[in-house]
Image (cartoon, rainbow, N blue to C red; front, side, top):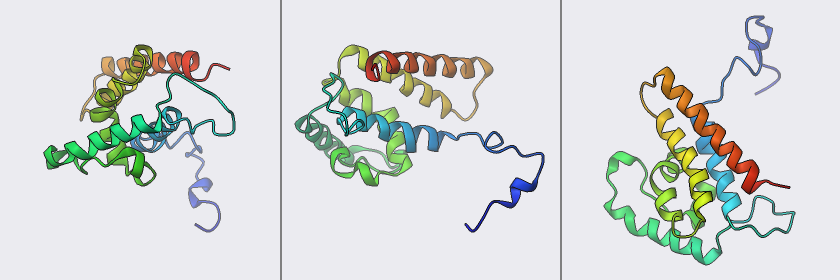
Length: 162
């Protein structure tokens, strides 16, 4: 890209409002990796903190091994088979983060996260599943909005509370 977009010259296009955030960039390339950073204690790497939503390296090793173990039994329809999240998260594609959110995160985190953290995250899982439907009603849009609000309330109360 060399210079400003020619679209800037159009008076009918307002940057950035004319370009809504899509599900891939919002959830799969942004939120999922950021929450993984929280759960691994790497989100606030310049601030020494200890939080009950952080899992130890050994817990992530177990989760990663479970993901590798189930890969041979996963149907091709889900896209990429699961890879060890601890080893390969930096190279995860959007479809892998999608599958982490909607298929793997809740069952694999259930053993390690406190109930309130699972409940908070489950709001994102439910919202993403609704957003992935081919057609959603206005009521479902309202449901997504409420689920995201619940997650935000949880996040501000229990994750970023300083």
